[in-house]
Length: 323
Image (cartoon, rainbow, N blue to C red; front, side):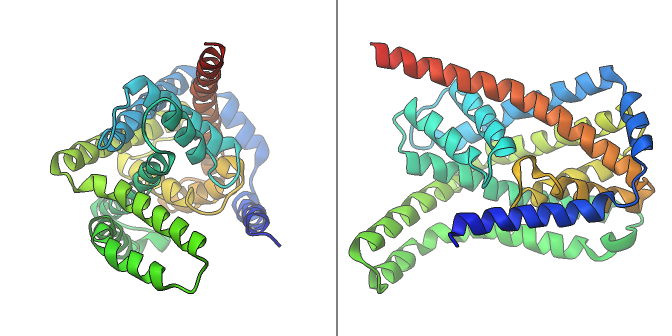
């Protein structure tokens, strides 16, 4: 079986398994009543906040891209929106390739470098959310259930991931030397060396102090707004989600999105919402109602901006081909 087929099969099985454990015993009539009574003004506010973080993520990615080129904010935004749109509706995080192609075709940056910055951004996010989750747990007066012993491992993993971003570029010579001696065809070795060079070039963008501070500052702002949006989204359903729990939830959802998944993270997001919210007194029904509405808002926002981004890209390509 091909690797891609294996990943698809694993994603489907994981989604089915997690979805089963998440929704068994759920009172679907109560879920429907909760969703129907949602405050539309609050949902609109949550959607606006999410749109704002989408723009800030584009600005943050642009910091890395501009280390070796010039990309304007609109180009970065439309590519980011289209990439998130792709990740929601395409398997294997194909959205990263979508935004890579969009930016590289509208700038002088190499595709491999653009993809490297996109993946480096994801790696930095993973490190950030683990530390955010650890801080959230440490600030809780009581850590119920499975969360009781989760703070220390999360902090260690976050610091380890952050350290890797610092250390890996310094290992470039050793990695290339190992690949040069690997018992592989010459063409394949050269390809791997090129991939390593571009990947480390993307990671090395974090080694500039000013660039790192800007990136870190925007990361804090982005996740703070996401947490606020979670609180507002909960309020729309009559759920009072503490801000610390909101931080913990978005950290867990972000980490969950790294797992092999079906489009839209079906199963994974439901499992995470139930696992994080129920220890704090929310019912499984409330957790499922919240995550379903949160996903619906996310799909609408990303679908709107992402489809506009793809439309603009298509029109831009048509204009170029007609000249």
